[in-house]
Image (cartoon, rainbow, N blue to C red; front, side, top):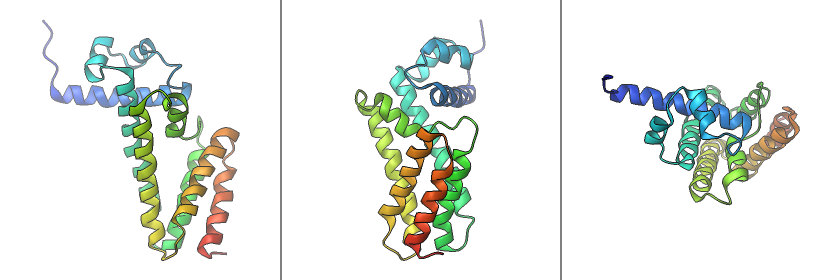
Length: 188
């Protein structure tokens, strides 16, 4: 009889599964990836996967939450290294430019998920909205530090750059959005 699986092994397997499906869903699309693909890529039996996530929708929501922590954490780490408040806001767009230039960039995972499942999955739509609100709030903190009332335009510039770069496959929208944000902030 095999040894029982420890809580630590469950935690590690769950995290590895989320990393795997994040890559699969982002690269190929959520609906294009079947649970047999998840099983093959993760090396976990379907029974075990379904113990972690009883339905594919649960797996998608957990993956989006997992990606949110990493994605917004990476953004914050980059932006908060910049001491000047106005330059900190512009650093958002520098980080976006780096992300857009990464191999395999396919746009915003939350916008993609919303496009695929938003109309049919309230749970996915709620998670997308939660992420977008958290991203908005994150930007608001940095913009408020400038003393300028430009949270909404800066947020929309970031979102628009993500959509445009995702569709065009070109990282230039981050540079254009940065220039527009600099104008809003009164930076040359």
